[in-house]
Length: 150
Image (tube, rainbow, N blue to C red; front, side):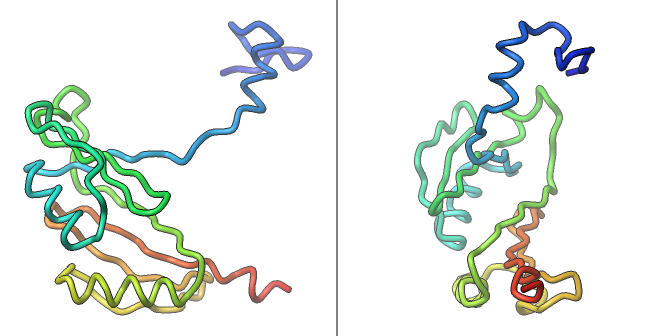
């Protein structure tokens, strides 16, 4: 949207524009490309620990969740309209280093592809990377910058 004089937003009634500026968004639900929906569901459920909330194999779309995180898994047929494809990168922000270590151990035991263990980076993230069977990357991190700023 383009702002005009006096705080107006082009094409919007002023009261509606004000309402939109203060709107709270829910957590985003990324669409994760998978080659085969059934295989993708099995991987996210059995290796990554997500819960299958619903799926429609004919449509090529499913919803999974773990805690507050929600994802859509979409096969090639479903994604054909927009043309979005793998790989993508998902950032998973955990509450502390212990959670990062625990998830790393769980995923490593489940056989998830993880190139290196959690590491404290100079840019103030304690993180590790994982990869699903479709080449998508999961960046699991804890931002410890606030610990050093106080």
